[in-house]
Length: 514
Image (tube, rainbow, N blue to C red; front, top):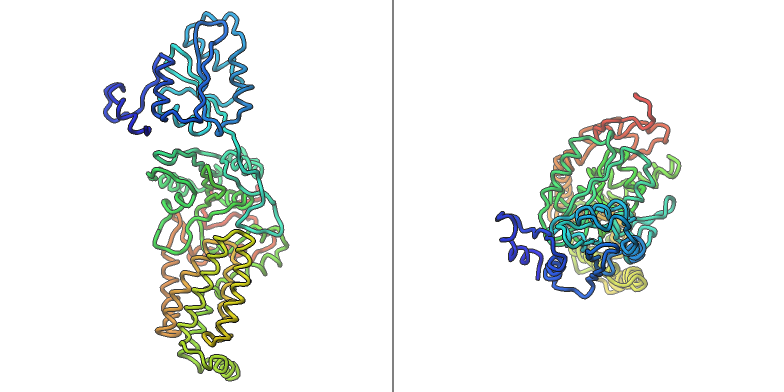
């Protein structure tokens, strides 16, 4: 029997409030336990331990779900404490006895009071333990969340050469602790929301008070409060709900598994959103420049960081424009190609039955299929499919005369360039745009590419992420931010936080002014 249906069948018991579906806790222990069993349909993993309270005439019950709790805490800090003699407190009323157990008996620090069956069920399903006492219409909700969970490991989706090797996990409390290890700041705030009507989950909004722009924080909270779905199994649900434009291919919220990346974003005046059950943390707001940056840029000397960023911008250009430029030049603007190169391309294309547009489209689609196959298959097989499949298909296509060797080189360079981008989301966005440019180049040549480029710039300039222009600090221009955009200036020169974030405290050094 579902929670909602049970509440509807019992709503006449609730203070005559037609909109209140929460069943109140009553004074009878047996009735409370029976109500909980009915609502949860008596699952096999629901553990109910009824016991007599020493030195009293009352009974109590410890209730939890096996596998969601830390058994050591329950046995050593709950049940064992409740079995100890109470002495002169044995003659107290149920209300006084529950208050004494709350204050003096149970040694777990995280304890709250619950008054409704809704609170009790959500607590139990979240890994807490509930203590009922006969004769009183309240319960103790004890924080005992535990069970099996993945240990802290190196991030899976974000490879790194230099930097911390720890990544977020599926436990939200572990993730908040990781952030606190990076930022020992009393103004670091963690505000908890409940997300999901049926599968209730904790969502934590993290920011540094005194740095973040209050308008950005207010907008983030406003959008989170509008979320109304049954469940949010992954932070991608939250990202899609709160983003500014769901029609845009560009990611308006950054997702990451790296605590150091989140810590750096918080110190820049941004907000981090953590969802229980996923290792991917969201960072907002986001800009196009953020998507091409990596924490490793700051771990190496500024010359290396600048070089790597420059290579990423070149890679972004290749990932978006290279196939379209090849199609346009080969099909419409052969005069723009140097003569020696034009003769070489013409020689390799001799006997190819398809025009350059169809050739490029088939090869890029094949490359996307290989990427998807490599992702879905087990890791050892996936790597083999990605490498061997690309070589075999490319060689076979050239031997069969279906595509030219130059086209294989163009598609390979395009794939390598997209792999070099630090953000998976921005790489996918560039691949989507690449297909649009391929069609434009196939129909209009360079004119089509230029028109698409103009429309793309108009879209980026108009796009915003929580009120921050997506194209900033390019446009609108914030000159001071350019020293940490394509160029990564030496660390001593990065004294100020990003100007476009409009932070309350813009100085990183503790000294006001530049």
